[in-house]
Length: 109
Image (cartoon, rainbow, N blue to C red; front, top):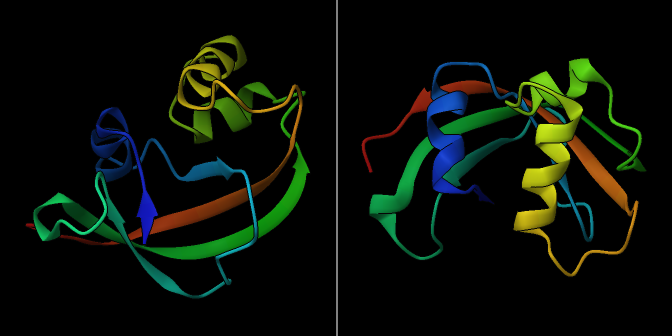
């Protein structure tokens, strides 16, 4: 399962968000299908399933305009502002997993 903030649901469903950056250990394998949800342990919070297309590791910064768009944001500045709000205790410029995905199935919860 991959958790997303509620504001990311619509961009994932409409195909404008197809990449996510994550801290921690690698939990995704290319070709795997993962449920997407806004809360753990709540079947009603599942909104889609995605197929993992690519997984790589790099530092958060700099993030290109194309990668910010893939994350569902208009600019690198907008993305970094959202990252900081979601990950307030993250170190500056952490090593992150960059997970690219494609919408596989929309779920009704």
